[in-house]
Length: 145
Figure 1 (cartoon, rainbow, N blue to C red):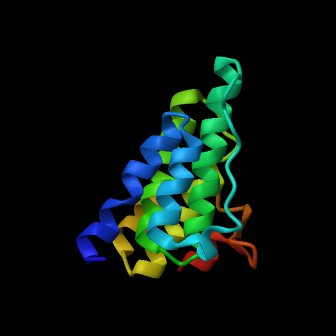
Figure 2 (cartoon, rainbow, N blue to C red):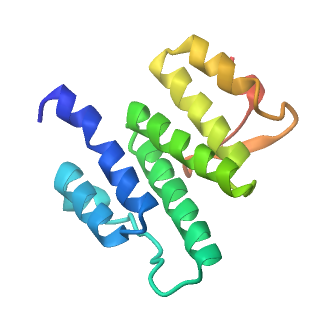
């Protein structure tokens, strides 16, 4: 896989999740990362749900993919996925994933050495809260320095 292809595959997958096409999204991820890498990745299905529940399911699935990419240390792809999660959270006026997504996006910028983007994201985060990053760490804004 060329570096350009590696950068490009995440946005079509995010669009599939946004369009509530979870099975296709999972298949595309498995095609790129392999079955063994994605065995722990599961999406909720939005089929047959009301519009409000469908929106929440789409948001939860975007967040799930963001977290998966962070856990896999695919920092640049995680940044993109968190950006989509943040945007949908704002559009739906749904705060549940919002601040955690902002923090994790900032963390990914830190891991990528993107200081300017880190500082921009950091301004949007509550300084007095702690956040789970992946399944191993609890961090605060101070840890982003």
